[in-house]
Image (cartoon, rainbow over all chains, first blue to last red; front, side, top):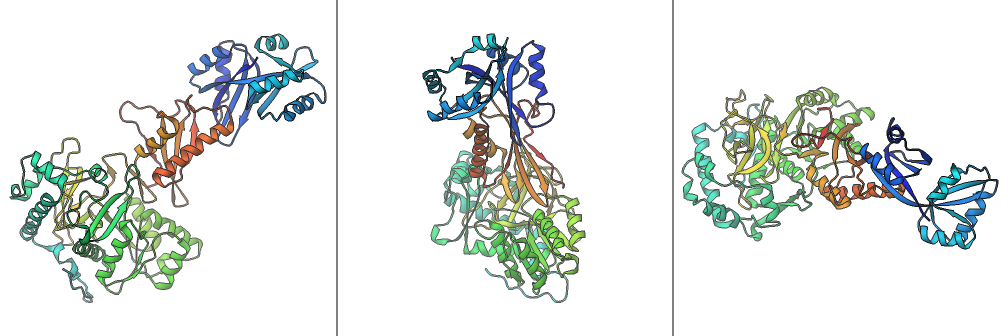
Length: 145
Length: 444
């Protein structure tokens, strides 16, 4: 049920973001969604792609330092309150969120939250118990296309 | 044996400096006599030395001439580490009146010891050092070398006192106070590292004090390499004559060599410290004028005699007569070392120490580089480390954690808080042979 997110270490200087992005483009690898965390000294680029293992190999060949991280994708209603509602579930259960980002589903009704939890397995159990829709990799592709 | 020193009101040379001018035959006679005595002393009392001599079928009687020294085994820094703390002593502790220590490459200090006579010899060579810089009784010496386990502070202090000068034992740091007292006490000489002096000059200017208007006329600068460019800058900025001083704790501390007024090579007090220059690869002794690694033998030390100690400093010996009249030979200013060691803020640093810290944190040795810069007169050290898959964390806090652990590991080993920059793979230049670990951008 968990997604594999691709993370890339970036130095904080011009051109560094372009390098992994171009490497993926050259191999025809599409990015479903992405997030970029920054500090004064470095950045971490986080990517959701169709084939994380392939993307990792391509990026490593291009000289990047790459990691794979388990994240959880949750569907929420794409209207005001959709995010707040989902977070109330996780907060009530005391789930620790490291970071999150989002994308819209193709149908316009739903949005997808991509969340890194400190304890992803427990998070999935909590979300299921609360009747929330946890999205796996195949469903994600279907929802976006 | 304490020497009597008195004010040299007539000009000319200070009486303490008499041995500097020994005619060569007399100098060689003193050296040979002392060499035979110290080899005997080391052989009788220092197990490591005796073992090595026996392995070579040598005894103290093998020394019949100064050239015979070349047969003897070398001593290296690792020997001090391996025998830590007191394994190279030739005197019982009850005869040792002083211990000093400096940081070793793995965090274990290098320990050195002095009997009462050793302290007197040290004071004598330091007095000769300061006299060589034109100082005498009546001079006011501001000693900004650090006091404590470091040999610089007490070494300069005892030398200035033996000379009969007035010592200000101010030690290092607190630059504002250094400037104030320099002005208020009318210091005529200062002893410190050259980079600290430049920092002091800048700070003095900020405080509205022009060192050129003060009685200060002599600087005795050492503990790190510095160029002719820096000398010119220091002399112009402060209206002083800046002398390069050389020494190392393993031999005695400061007081091994000093520039005279010619400022063309450092006279070595070779009646106490016998110099050789060797090929660092083969160990072969090179003739005067050829460049190689400086090897020193202490001719007078009792507590911890050092026979053929490899200093890892690169220089050549100058046997041409010096216009100052001294017969003790000069060596060229030390510009570089035979290993990778560099000096920052007066602290010796080996890249291997940084490597040890990286290994501790990462488990593997990533590509790294050390960048040295100077900002506001103070040395800065930045370590660039390539991020590897092993340490890459998807969490910002995880990466910052890695950074902090590396900084702390380096601080633990070196006592320096470095700047750390995490960089992408393959940003640090690869080399064919020995990796260029250190990029020194400090303006010489």
